[in-house]
Image (cartoon, rainbow, N blue to C red; front, side, top):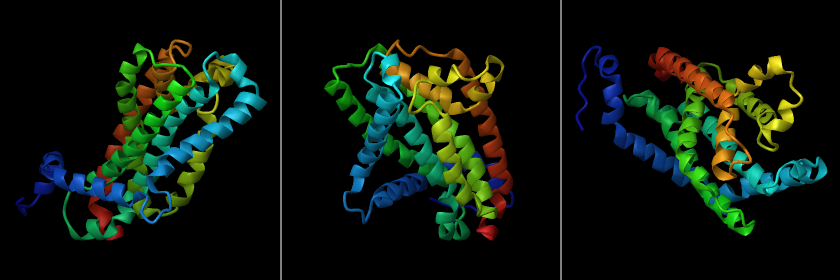
Length: 276
């Protein structure tokens, strides 16, 4: 590959360079995959244990103790795990992508390439964890005797929706994290807060019953509400019908954060090498 040094070239051909440097994207993604569970005792099994333990705890607390399981006919463990699939991907992708620029400081400060490749590669790695957890979910469906319906064919659409839902905030936070390192402490708190206000451990209708109708639009501003709705419709079935208000709101918020994230990232990109 030839790199031509020309005044203004990087700005003029930025989006073409994303394709030219696709091999670097593959290298970064593969490197992150290979080191994710390096020097851990059980390795990639963590991708199974984390969502499984969260599902078991959520089923006991919300399904048995809170009695939410009686409100649905599907096994409550599957209801939680379907939401956990979407949330675990969002959580992992946002955490990794937000710190991706600082963890690749040596590469960014020495070599030219579109910096957008770095957080995007981190998000792609989160898809590997998602794929492993999804296989476990299919096995659980067989165990509970709850086979998938034809709705599952629409799942790729909601996976793409989840990808872009995390992409925008990740670009925005990753760029700010280069200058303001406080974000590394703020992100875990935001994700922990979001975990409980997003319908991961409980069906959405349980919390909507508690929110006044005129304030429900604020809840729909969480883009993962529509994504999780879609996941449950695809994986559990018609018991969780699509909420088009939630999906439309998620798409609108996702587009807004994509615009904001790319705008902020490109605005600060030229200063990354100096600040990092």
